[in-house]
Length: 253
View 1 (cartoon, rainbow, N blue to C red):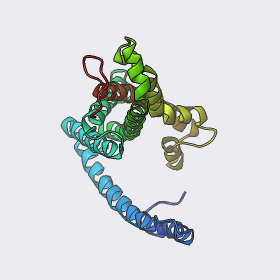
View 2: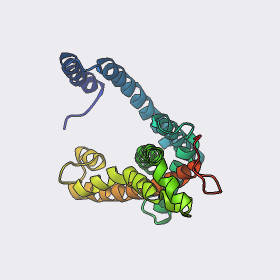
View 3: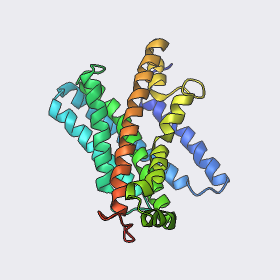
């Protein structure tokens, strides 16, 4: 593969132009978003590239932790803003993503799968946080919608003496499954339908295919734990917003 520099990046803008042309021809109103998104992606990624170079050279533990916390905070804000069925859920997404991310990274450090170095923690943390962000948003949206759409069934269960946990159980499980569906589908089809990013990146960089595969397996297991933990914590925090301590369904949520 040819060396990728700024020249190749600018040439690749032709791909963006073709995409915009196709969208305009079919009158799909996303041309402006494509153009702005492409510019933002360029600026953000180049800035991150220079920033990571500085962080990698400094190798300060407090700086690594700060970067991870900033990433989680931004991701939690993005996830909560995508949820339309429940307002004011930043605390839920923040708490769930924080627990899911720190548990996963912590276990990988304790098990000595990775070292506490910026070049490991930050890129892998980004993968964990990105997937956790999507899982949390999908979980909240599904659970909130299901509870609102099934108020009568839930109230009937409560009137028969069931606890709020029993009355909402199937909706909680369905929401958690929704949050995990992406990683579950990925693990079923990885290597057959598509070659994932970490593996592809290593191969393009000249690594041996088997080394790339082994890294991708670790990444897949890592994301599975992060998404599972985030989804479970999300449903546990979300479902409590809909019920009082007297096992009554709230109408103002």
